[in-house]
Each structure stands twice: as C-alpha cells, then as structure tokens.
Image (cartoon, rainbow, N blue to C red; front, side, top):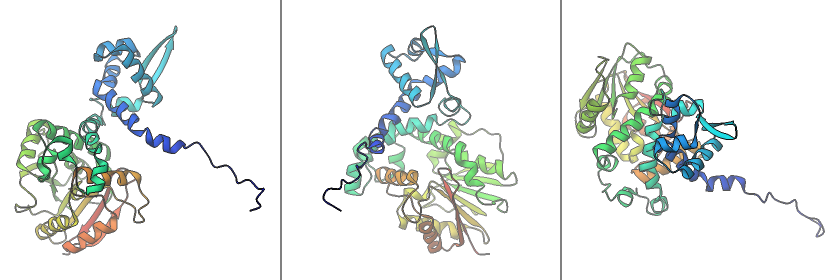
Length: 352
C-alpha cells in the first residue's frame, strides 16, 4: 500500500459487543416483571392499565414500576397506549401466552428457576471455567457431590425444577417425540421422567403406547403430590434409581435431559444398563440440545454447555459424541434429528 493511501475506517461502534455486555440486563428485566406478576395483572384486567394501577396491584413503587414497564415496552413484551396524555400498558400476545402463570404454554416457572437458581450460579462462571467444576457449593453453600441434593436443595426447589421441566416440554415436547416414528414401541420407560410432562406428549402423539416413569422416590412422591392427575391410565410412576436399581423391561427408553448431567463414563454406564434391560428390537431415545459437529453452534446449546459446567458434572454434546456412547453401550443404527427448537433427538436400536 502506498504510504499516502488511507485504509478504510473500521466500524468503530461495537454494537454487537455492547448488546452482549447488556444481555443480563434484558434477562433480569424479564425475570423481575414475571416475579412481580406484571403480566398476570394485565391479563386479569383484560384492559390497558396505567403504571400507577399496576404499581398498586403488584405492591411496588410507582417510579420503579414506570421504569420497568418502559423497559418491557422497549423489549416488545408490552404494548403502550396513549389517551389524553396518559400512557397505559397491555400484554403482547406472546406475553400473555408465555409469561403469565396461567398461559397455555407458560414459561413462567422456567423463568423463575433461571432467575433464582441459574442466574446465581452464573455469577461464578469464571471460577467454573478455571476449576472445571460446578459452582453449586459457592452459590448456595450446598455440597455438590450428590447431584440430586445439589439440584434439589429443598422440597420447594424440587417443585420449582419440576415446574421448569413441565413448561419446557409443553413448548418443545411434541417436536422431540415426533422427530422419529415411535409408534412401533408400545411399552415406553421414561427414565428420570420427573412429573410426567413428556410422557403426556408421548401418549398424545401415540395413543396406543403406555409410559412408565422411573424416577427417584422423592421425585415420584412430589409428582404425585403436586403434578399427577389420575386421568390417564396409560401413564404410571415407579420409584427407583436408574444407576443402581433393576430397570423395567420396555420397548423404548427415553432419557430426556439426563445424559447432559453426567460425564461420558457415567453416560456409557447408564446406556449399557438400558441396553441390557431393553427388549430385542427395542430402542433408546435421547433428548438433548445437540451441538453442531464443527463447533460453530447453535449458540443456545453452547451456552447450555457452559450451564452444565456451572451446575453439574456434564456437558452438551454433538450427535456424533452421543452416537459413540450409544455404540459403546451396544446400540446400533443410530440416527439423530435436529428439530429446529431447543432440544433435538437421537435414536439408537437394539438388534432383534
């Protein structure tokens, strides 16, 4: 380049970096509006409300409420209305559907868990990256040697986590259950099936099947107390520890958001137990957020993998990595499908 030429000026405004820097502000704004019940109040009112009306109903300061509502409007979670110089607010369609407690596809409980548990753990992400270990003990003062006791620090925490699982499967469950044709499998065992939300998606998509949920005694008891409605004879609960107790014989085993909690060695151990219990010609369905083989994404799965570092001893993986573990456990003809949603599906067969 001639010394007199001037190089093209680089874009000196780091828009994307600034957006990333402020990302936690967006999350916490959403978390706070949900926690205060702003979207619930507006749904119940069935008309636009002023900041003063909302602040009085949720029990918050007028100044703080005005700022929160303005931010939610900027995030396109609320719609604004002006009349005689007065500003009022109403929910957007998505806010009523996903952010209210009573919304048919509510993510409210998932948001609460993110705010009160995941958000606190991520304060120690730097330590997790340095140490290569989860940070539950630092975040909550609870030993993380036992994953069950780390995830379920109290009965209240267990209910919150199970509500989170319900909300996720209400949004993504049918996509993963129908990623493959599971109709040939009549007896299904959902290992670690929690409250049965994914099992309900199974019986809805495949009316001929029955689903047995195999989970720890405390989880089963909590499910029966808070979640189970005795209106579907095709779904039943069995108490047990899938690492230590004999597994139920079934045509298909589902492990949804299970393997990402564990090391590769523990995953192969569990999959080998599943293979041994599985009927010849049966299969196992893994439901996880799959990473691209080239490591370039998707971003959600990459962030979830960091979350596994902060919270568990596991990680998110590629389809090929799950395929290798399934092969090591004895499964064959392994396929995986991307759903375009948060979670994807991997299917492995046991030879007849």
